[in-house]
Amino acid sequence: MKTYYVYILTSKLYGTLYIGVTSNLPKRIYEHQTKAVSGFTSKYNVTQLVHVEQYPNIIHAISREKQLKRWRRQYKLDLINLHNPTWTDLSKTLL
Image (cartoon, rainbow, N blue to C red; front, top):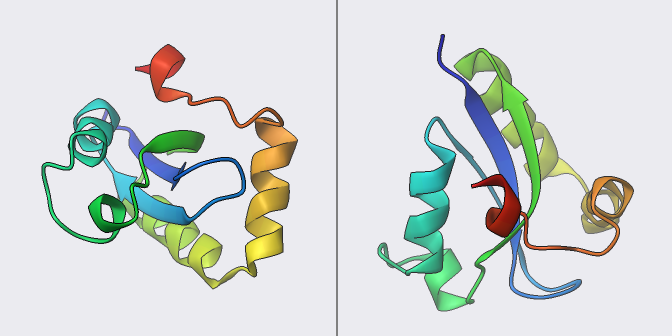
């Protein structure tokens, strides 16, 4: 069974945030960190993984991604602080 991930990246502590969804988290984070694809994350140096959620269904993952993107910035910061209060780059331990 495939797993899908909703993730939040940041440029630094309380910096620019990016929310995405993928089925291959290691590959996608690598692409962000190496700036393999030009776009928002490469332009604003958004490379640190600070929040991850897993879903068994792509529909649920996309729904959650859209929900998070609609949230006010403070709600997103609160979510990160709840699960990762030190804003540790999770890519160093999870991947």
